[in-house]
Length: 300
Ligand SMILES: NC(=O)c1ccc[n+]([C@@H]2O[C@H](COP(=O)([O-])OP(=O)(O)OC[C@H]3O[C@@H](n4cnc5c(N)ncnc54)[C@H](OP(=O)(O)O)[C@@H]3O)[C@@H](O)[C@H]2O)c1
Image (cartoon, rainbow, N blue to C red; front, side, top):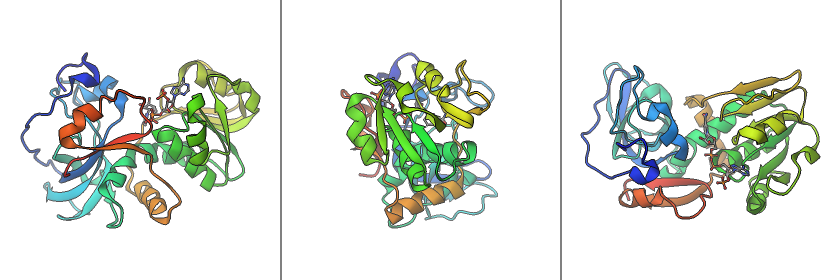
């Protein structure tokens, strides 16, 4: 991407030099990658940590691949190891054949988990995990309102919250009902036609939508409950409760918990489409509504 105003249509597939590892980095041969469409709006997509323009910018931060080189001083990972995780927001990303990433951002990807599945998990799975358990301090028996419950993050939130013993109310558009229930929601609220207030009180709101929906949801939280969002906090806060806006971090122990659940059949990834790198620009500019992650199978 070179043009910040062009949107996803501004993506082009070009040859770029192979990235060089810095201290504590590894080079990963990317086998599969994914991105979040809102990346195009994030300042970190366009500037480095010092605020300097870093375009042309390679998008994508979800990665699954194989370590091919170690930077100076890197420990903990070995050449040839299968890995997955999230790469640094301020550096070139994973929609590429190779990416450099600090080794501490990666976990081992078990040999029986496909690279495409591995690449679908980090951002959405870690966001759900950290929002529910680290920031939301979810406990068994609590009620969770999981917004966008048919989306990439929401399907992970519903499944993990249900497994943890919570009662899950999923939300979304009318067409999302079946998928939200299939991915673990006990109930569904149609944000386009139902009245959110009808669900009653909840202990935890997991917001991925923001705006008026976040504000209405905050009013439904029981005293002592929590509003967790990844879209920025609005003006309404839960009474006698906590509100937390956070950015997901690549934590290897959390990645391991997530992938173990996928291996056990306790967690399903939510992949809409898998496309080869040559077709990535078209796949990342869909003509229809997205229904989960678009994963780019870089080696196919
Ligand atoms: N801060 C962080 O660390 C972090 C991490 C991950 C994601 N995020 C953010 O979280 C958001 C969700 O990410 P995602 O990957 O889960 O996206 P996604 O796969 O598009 O899921 C969002 C879901 O919510 C639905 N939705 C959105 N607005 C709605 C509305 N007004 N009424 C009913 N349903 C609505 C979407 O439907 P439609 O597609 O029809 O709109 C979609 O099904 C994005 O803004 C992303 O940037 C932030």
